[in-house]
Length: 109
Ligand SMILES: Nc1nc2c(ncn2[C@@H]2O[C@H](COP(=O)(O)OP(=O)(O)OP(=O)(O)O)[C@@H](O)[C@H]2O)c(=O)[nH]1
Ligand SMILES: [Mg+2]
Image (tube, rainbow, N blue to C red; front, side, top):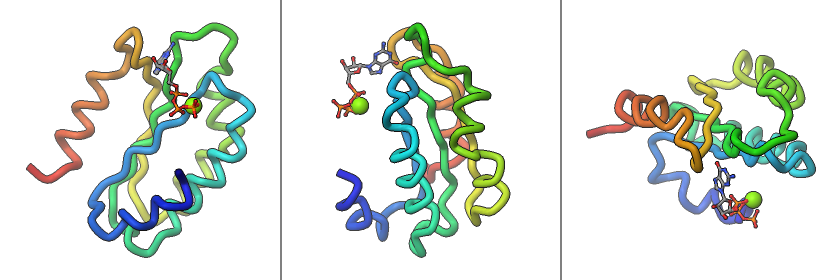
């Protein structure tokens, strides 16, 4: 659905970007997609939450490896938006409290 995301950017005041961290084959495509979101003019001021989901599944990379493949430190340093990253499992509930807390601080009431 990536190609149609820009149709929604004008009404968007914050971004949650979900990465399936159990699918290592999609990592490079996901990284390119994230860079394209971050470079969108309409999203320059939007706070961004990058969620590494499915952390409950075995044989996934560590968050450190994942962030390193994404070059997340370079992305955070060069993007105009404030970027937060979280490790989550929608299945076990790991990290969901932190997601809610991010939503509370970064979305208009
Ligand atoms: N184990 C686990 N499964 C999850 C988690 N989050 C979502 N799922 C499952 O993942 C499946 C959905 O697939 P996703 O890959 O997340 O969805 P998608 O990317 O829209 O679909 P695809 O294009 O098929 O990859 C559902 O069966 C969910 O129950 C999680 O944190 N842990
Ligand atoms: Mg998927």
